[in-house]
Length: 370
Ligand code: GTP
Image (cartoon, rainbow, N blue to C red):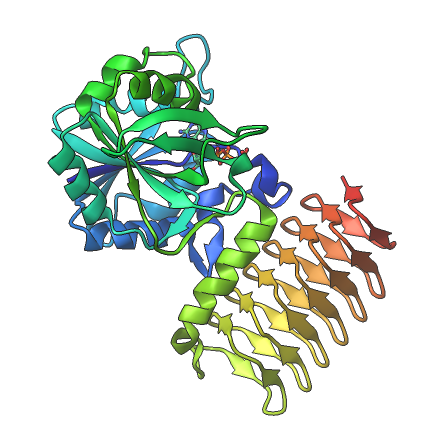
């Protein structure tokens, strides 16, 4: 069985962290999201995966190479005839991979930015039993307005597909970004043109009664927004507490530092005396944390340095960031890769700092340091 993973989006909602890293390389409990997806696909018997890449394609290819978890990896790059590289949209990217998938009776297609424990084999079984052209996994959510929402018939066919309804959503069952397609799907997408599968193909095939829905009820989080990314990390590390037992290779936690689980700490991390880490914190490889530091509900990417008496809450800190002494960073801040934050600075309430900037004065309430 083959699977295609959509991996080429710009991840604009996660900027500025996504300015220097594709979303699928964002760590969850210190492992790239893509790693977690490939592992689950391997467990479901998938042996070949096509990564439909575009934005920062080279970074993905460098990180994952030719195989992972015994899955052979292929890279299909978005390209339009009149430009060397351009985003094809979700449908265009699927069409671009046609040569690699056409031979399959059916294949999985997944949005790469979903943390899910959906049972892929059950979705496939449903697809085969019902014998239609496409099956979408559906998730029940409280607020469907930011998703593709469906109306399901008694036989399980999708009768209506509305992408991001502004009002009167037909149900609270939404597109979970996990599909099984027969190769006939390629006939619905024009080659060499940008196309959204959600907006251009699904409404059409639902009218033709070829689109099935299959409700899943497992863990499912779309990590497209910072708050959901932090939530996904929190839930995942709570399941991995085992993995954060000490001593990890090269990791050195001072005896009187306190670790409040769930916390996920990678290798070669140093944590100074009296520091309090957790709950709901992940700390990437090679981070150096000083004394009397407090970190809660945050994701710290690799190689970050945090000096003494600094407090970090509800924040994402990009790779290689240097944070001085007595700094406060709180509530929804996003700090881009390799930023330097000087001693005593206070950044609170959704401040964003672009990569490589140096910050020496306070900022708050959604300010953007560019
Ligand atoms: P935002 O810009 O924040 O909306 O994020 P995004 O660009 O990732 O878009 P979205 O979350 O809607 O994308 C869903 C999935 O499709 C993600 O895994 C994306 O990487 C992928 N994707 C979106 N657009 C494209 C595209 O044009 N080409 C390819 N190859 N993949 C895409």
